[in-house]
Image (cartoon, rainbow, N blue to C red; front, side):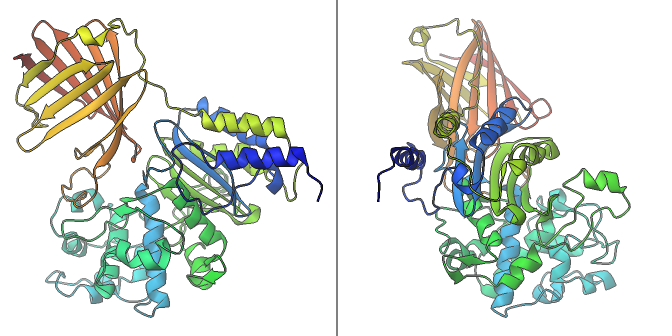
Length: 517
């Protein structure tokens, strides 16, 4: 065979792409050039540039076509080896656990929900509750109204609280998004298998796909939350989407029946049957709901999590796209895929474009979130002495804050009645670390959610906004969110603002303290 230097260079280029510093040690998905699978590298560059000028904060992106990864990027300090909080994309995994249980003849979708919880039932069982089936949980058509999720997570027994709530609509007739419905599916899995959902899925789903290191939040009774709380890597999410694209087949083995994949990803209920056709045609949230997945425009379907965690499966294009982010206009976020990436997928190969592929690689490898911006008037942080502040009583129960600097690294230590939390912040860079202090989360009312989970990965960076104002940003890099500490110094006093994304002003805490050192 004659040596082709251009082909060799392209192959080497994308081999290097898959071996970036910090990447996973073992890569199970093959890599390819975009043009080799009929996609323009320039179109992917255009997509990334559109993301950079959009209102969305992307954290990771992977593009898979014909079973091969053709583009992947992480916005620093997010990294490929880090898990990502999926929020409601977790629901698609819970429905898959139900699919495995059905294939093993442990249950059927028409089983009555109350049959699994004899010890949690209310004294009086309404006709609608008696009718409620697993299928109604899967399709978010329980009959409750409004969504009870935020109230239920504040209780100690979520199963009992869910079953005690009135059902105002006949099950199966009206869609209402309800994360507790998914939790009940997780509870059913644990009832019929004796295992947490994550344990049940491990030999059936995670191990065959080469997914490792995942974890899942739990309720106060040790049941996986089901509707949210699963954390795994972005590449793991792409693998899951590819499994659906391949109708449950993985490396020549049918690991879940194709009939279930088809049933779980097909339209089951219309969310708003009375809207106009023009509105339906313009919305990816009006295409119908499946089993814990959403139908999309362009004959696609997706797993969908709060703040823009997407797993988009496109059967017509033989493609899967995964995105993790902190975004607020999710329709606009997904519309970037339709505008830039969908039309870039051609049926056959394209001519290789080495220069453009080099540009794409450079673009992907340079992705980064902005560092805190400021004047850095205090250039030599070593001249600033250690300072400890006793804080006035506050709702976060922070007793003291200690701030010090050494070698252009800032250190913050906060002490409560029960724990000390310490963080490091780089100047013009991110300092990575770990903490057991929970960061911002959608379901912050439940104190048991993180029981048994490992320490949270964080990355911190600081800047002086002026001579008396210090800003420290702490990113929870396995979640979409971050915390900003803004400290105002005046003689021996400190006024500290703690702002949690995604809505910093409404969740702002103001602390006051006096220096004792």
